[in-house]
Length: 472
Image 1 (cartoon, rainbow, N blue to C red):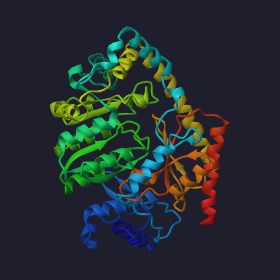
Image 2 (image 1 turned 180 degrees about the vertical axis):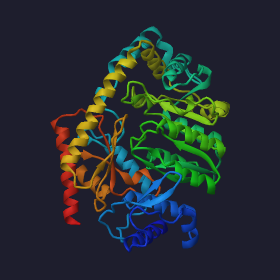
Image 3 (image 1 turned 90 degrees about the vertical axis):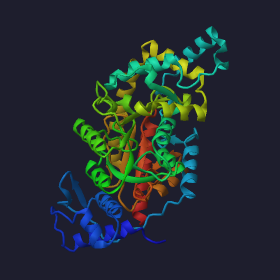
Image 4 (image 1 turned 30 degrees about the vertical axis):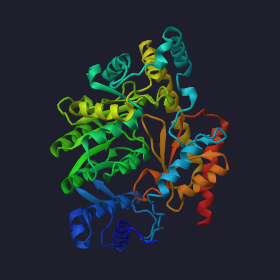
């Protein structure tokens, strides 16, 4: 299989570094100049530099450029070629991964679905029962777009916690957050338009972009600091980017959150280039801090943000209740929502509205956030103890996902397949990018019932990593 061009470029530059052309701590050639010297596109150079960052060879310094790391990893310029993704194989792989996540016999570190103990199931059961007793006709009634007014009122109240003052009329209920993002993309873009996305990113967003026949430019997302705004600015300088799709709070899969200065910089950057931001805030309520982070939408001096979220990660994944605040695109979004689904199930909307009204949600969130943070620390400690030397785990400040970087010779897809035979589910990094960049990465969900069995499963994954290294 032919090696991707960006990987050839990365290997060539890395060999120059190993040969002493660029010394540790010195600046390397700019993206534009490398593009001219190597006779390749700027996009190819950006991908190559991103790969070199992932290998730990170079690092980006905002507003300055790229520099060779002071301490280089023990590596060579010849790297194992990762299996290429194809349009045919990737949907099948994702489908298999999702189906394996429904197997109750498997310890589910893979799918980003919290276990039932972290969801207010009994309270929802009471809400549904009460509604069915008092309003039995509710199952037969359509709740046309934009959705149940009682739910939209409660969402408007909750949005105050994220710094947003919105009215119920500003909100449209959707079938989950991904459905909201699909509506936003349809309202703003047409086939062939270019969208800037984080990489790694949630695989569902990659599929949405493919289905809508859009072009994607992947901008590295660092587990600590979020989307690389320096590279995003480079991209804006070279392409007409219609949309920037970003998760500023507890990003999936890295767990990263943008700092306040980075949020303002991102907003200014997109305003300067007349690019609409689609804000995916599905994990926003799960911050470990006492107060959740403000959303991008809360910066009222900007009118280029479409906000998308859902209750799938905090109340009821199976209810599929999300929402979108589309601003100047709201009328068009409501049209798409109405055409595609006509109505959202009435019972689930009203049940969640009832749950939010009784004030139990904040108590539920406080307890859940505390447990998630405890699980995260426990999981990280086990990884440090039992995974191969050189393994890195993210340190999220919210959500329930851990992004793990393994030694390069550990193939995360092979690890996933081997772990399944041991009754352990993981999510390989391959599916979080268009390019085969994250072959030695995996994502772990720690919203599980944590016990000795779970501890043993993490240790077992570490053992399987060591086996791959010894067989390499």
